[in-house]
Image 1: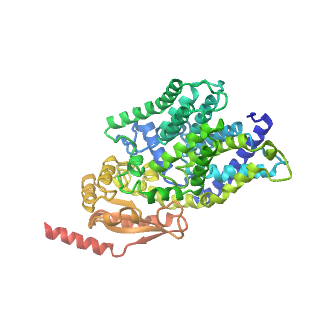
Image 2: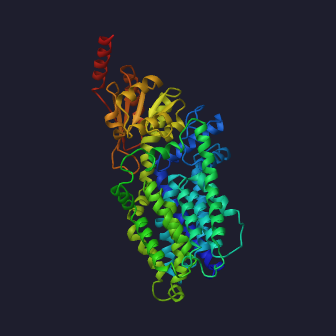
Image 3: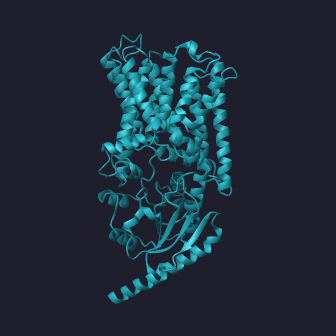
Length: 560
């Protein structure tokens, strides 16, 4: 298969990077208008990494509370990268995740430009130009993922780069640094543990080369022993850093995996219906594009497995990784969990197109090029991505209007005091003092209690925890604790968004006092802070709360 010409490569990268930067710039401007000029990300999670990074820099602590180790980051390498940018940008550490994502996106698009050979945008091929824009903005979802402020783009770039390198070696190419893909696998593993799914695919692809129908043309001299050694090397590149992380985590009194993985990962969360057919179907239905790409990958493997194509290697990697991910991990949550699979599918399927689509169907003609048409047809399965990309500014407004304001509130009135919340990110970043995370992402003791009780600890547990840790205020969404709220906790008031939400779990954010004595100060503080809330966020004070406080106080006095 001929390599991309330098001119075509530059044209692709120019169109792709241009579409990415223009769209990102537009989203950023609209988001800043929604957040009064404050850089806030579309979800709360980036602030968890920023919080850990700040504690690491200033206190030498890995966790969201100074002096207390907690495995609160599911992406240790990303957190270290955020810490590095925070050192370089002490005046604006919140810029770090944005800049890291911009760099990772450009690297990823340059990789795609160097690898693919079928999309050649130009004024003579307008369909290809439109397809490249759609690919970058919608299918790869890069501008919206950047505004999430998380590690997914960097992880995707490392994964794709490694698979491309191993695929070229499998096809018999010897150029390039032989150690590079192994290093990329190791780094990707420490960025997201879903890398292990891709490694399983790489191992399967390496071993499949031994079979006559699966090996690329011209690779008749391969041996089982050689492929086993290569597969073992790939596996070791992922297993060694993974085991190192596990050993450190356990030595520090934590679980085998990061708290967030133990809390949210379907295979380890403790929920009974993780592997039910309904649950697996639901995960695939969350992203129709992923389901369609998986089906297409399987079809291409079945049709072309005896044809000696070099693209078979990538198809095996993609299919095995997708199956493993759907079985063991999550799909969705702003389209980020499966982003690496979608991008890997784009790389692999464009490689397939270069092999099987006749050259004349890819040359400039008066008719729509076939590959560009196929790319654009994927938009029919990308309705969720289109909608979420459009809603990025509203998602930022959600975070700014609720979690960021709650962080400011707790920083002002409860600085240095213990607090509890389900929204760990911006609150732990701005608030100085002990934090109890009721979801367990930053609190291993709570996490273990949730896993023991099917994610629903009893009201008695929360009441005892409040007594032991001394927190007077709890900030949660109404559905977070639901029937778990102790009778002694009093709803002091709420903040409410005046519209439907995008990334906020509920339009309402509740503030509980954990004792009658804590109620009056909390209600006074909510009233004092109300004028500072952004437009569209209103404060509601529970007028019946003082009566409830009096009743509880009377019960306590009678008990004494």
